[in-house]
Amino acid sequence: MDQFPTDELRALRARAYGPDADIHDDPRALRRLQELESLLRTADAPDPAAAAEAAAPPPAGAPAPSPPAPDSRRPEQPASPGVTTPASAAETSPSSPAPAPRRPRRRLALVWALTLVVAGLSGAAVATLVAPKDPAPIITLPASEQGTWPEFILGPRPEGAVLFTEHLGVQLVAAPQQTDVGSTMCLYALSADDPARGAIAVGCDAGPFASTLTSVVTVDWPAELRELYPEGSAVRYVLEGDRVLVYAAPADGAP
Image (tube, rainbow, N blue to C red):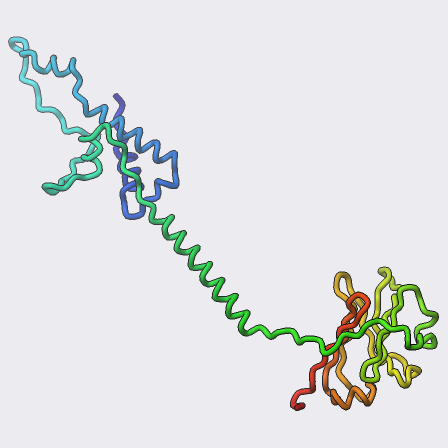
């Protein structure tokens, strides 16, 4: 029999029974450990032919046999009385399977994953508490045909154009416009009392985002609106189908 791979067995046992056991993640190494331990148990079994030859008396005149050389396959390891090492347990119980290796790394990975989940939930809760809520619209303006189409500003009324109900002296108009990248829908804010002054502000859609007109209130806005929302306040008009959602926020420091 070839020399037994003692160093390989020692290394595999360290991976299976040592403090940093990781052999459970390497099926090939685990099979090799079981194979070497099985070979070791087989090698320790007595050979009947060798036992009979050793029991026979030596022939007359034969030199006395020299003491056997120490077995180099397994290093001598002192053992405390009453303590059973993994190697001795495997040798004295050939039929018992190898003990299942510990899995400290898998437990650590599980604890780490749970920590990330808890941290993510905590972060989501904090974000929910501190994130400002979107303001609710102050009014929704439906489409209306009572107004006059501002042809002198926007030209002849195109197909798909919509007039909306006047609000605080503001007349809103939605009309499609042709651009270099195709048709876009724009929202215009006009003065209901003096539409000839032109558009006060304009906002168009962009891809999936609806037409939105956002502006700071200035002297150009109707006096009726400025009485409720003084200069410096913010207004927003969002086109949603056949209606417009109106948002407003007072200026900083306003009551």
